[in-house]
Image (cartoon, rainbow, N blue to C red; front, side):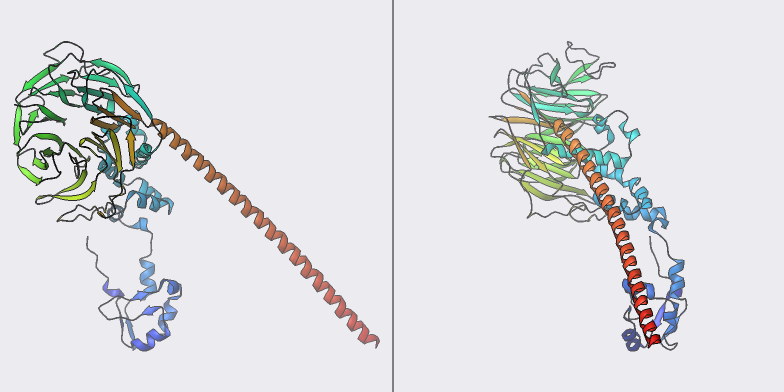
Length: 549
């Protein structure tokens, strides 16, 4: 939207020396520049002031006072499109500060659509946050949803309790957290897929042995799939009326479960979206499947074993060997490749909900963070590197703002990416970055390290105020941070009470001070009256003495 200066407000000044020396409120500059008015002297700048200017020195077509009066107004008087465009440039914290200025700005900032964009950028669509409560979206605005979710994200720095789940006879290779239903799926060397209640930490069901090691599981509310080292994908369809969605205990049922074969090597990673299934294998391929027909649509060839994958929209991120790749899932073309991402194999990969951030973990114990931007070409920018582990990083999980990793050293690292990223909205660079301002020399170490295992950790999941991890011991551990959320809520309530009491005491002190000032004024008035009466008495006495004389 273009704006032009009005010609009828033009001021031409010729004799600059006398005008500027007498009136410091106005700075005289070239005719092709603006006239700068000092804000401190703005109130005295009126038509009487203009009358003192000689006619030969200035030609004023419209008095400034009339022009300013005709254009005076508040920020809320601007057209809605302009207000929306201005607010789009603000960060959540800045938008909250704007809301504290006035009632009108509070309404504009609180109801603005940008809060929905903030939420989507961090946590995706609201369907991924069903655990926040029933009918949550209908009861709260997008700002309230954002503030609540941002508050919940602080819990991973608080207290926790550990729930230990027993049931697997051998090492656990994969875990998957279905946050919307608070379900947990695990499997490994014992060839059995187990379903757990993540809230209670209790087993729900277990499948029959599937015939080989299960290295990958993926699920949503309509489908559960598991990939085996024999190269097959075994799946279970949702069962209507089942509170736990899938009946994995029953023997093979052609109507409710299925198995597809096409990979020539062990399946190492799986993923689902609305219409497709994705599988990666040591046969150096990623296969894209149609969910309804179970037919293979595309085959993406790599140069080494495929270790992990993560689809988003029309792109797929994957790691094979020591490199990372970005693919177009529609055409099957390779969009970008990051060669030699790690020293050794790149075992793990995670992506943000927007698909712009890509995380890789490798055999060298390091974690790399990349930014992906798609304009004419797909570009990748290395943002940060952490080395929190002394062994290979086998698994990564990301839920804004926390990146969780597990390693063969038996430790879990938690990295908060908020301090690393400073989003500059609507200032997307066309060459390298999509608006993230990053200081590569000021990367903090992981905010927290969790311990509890003594040997290899193979899989990790995050969601619903919990972190789930499993490994060679054959047990599944859940770090439960819900207690930290309750403590934080109590702390927030107490902080509000203390603030209210402080404001009440301040108001009381102000009232007492006002009464004290009033009493002092009365005493001063009484003293003045007494002094005046005394002086009048002395004057009368002097006058009477003179008369007697």
